[in-house]
Length: 458
Image (cartoon, rainbow, N blue to C red; front, side):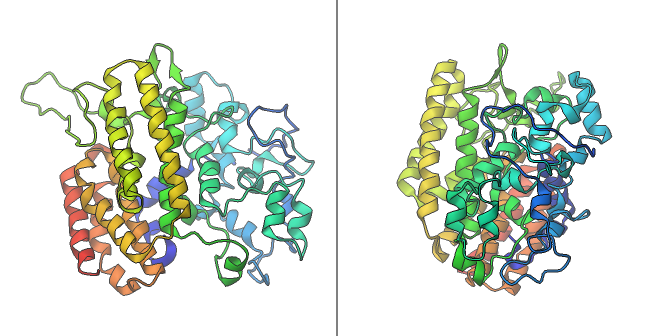
């Protein structure tokens, strides 16, 4: 999304959304001793941020490195930018809001609770002498424990493939990156990495996920010609599409594992389908909204389908046959909530399998100008009837930004032309600024205005 420099991060709404999404990661200064092995977490030794911070590695004060900038640590530690959010993650647990959430949950100290530190820090069970939990979400939380690849990573003649073979996580690949980010920015089956409805009811922000956004906000390196010679540069469309597919798969897979006593785990549902105004006064309008993608009866809890809506748009263009299958299975999944849990789990499994197939198809695809324009039209116009709820709208405006950025990056349109779309896109952001004042008609009108101008660019 940084390709056309539209100042997306500069908008107040975007800062708020990014802060909400990034606060699921987060940094009280304490040295943590090696913990007992936790099943599911990275088994390699994590040596800590200090092992990456030398001036001959990533700790320079200026970007003067011959291949990479080598000041990546400075970017990661930026105290005032969103690029520094991971380094600040641990400190969030010391703030009044976190302590209040802990008090409501009966947690005496959130900074020592596995429910919190597994995403607000590095949950590595095996830690070297330089490991410091106060570093927050450190390098190895996203790149894997370095004990087996650190030496080759610094060697002049070592290749990226050799480092990956030794255990470096290949986050240059969109699917790998998505699954690493989803662990904290949506949830996983690993200990402590799931924000339940109980935790949200205690005050934790709503969790959402958009991989291209995360990639843009957390970029610590330059994807220049030298980078491209060593690693693939997938581009915004592929990163976005793969991220949406795997977000859908992750939600569907986790849903079958979790419940909350006699109730389903409401974390997976659309928050505002229940948390809306309610009145016995017959003069007060009913707030229920009909969504063409959800064949459900009134009163049925609504699955949070924000990523599923985006996935439908991408699939219709890039993988039409799978797209038709996805649409049919999506409707069947929504309808299954009127039946029993076994039927819902079966429908979810079928939909998750198709989502996984789409992630693979997107990863193999080379998205051209025509497909990018078609996806943009699907997001702006084709999906318009599905933007009944805030979550879907927030995903849509970010998707539009991503796809327009991709058109600029590929030189399909120039930056000046893209900037002309900014006012209408900002209107869409403004319409989605406050979830409690969500106005779908106003939002759709803003997207339609963007769509009209985009059609003139083809």
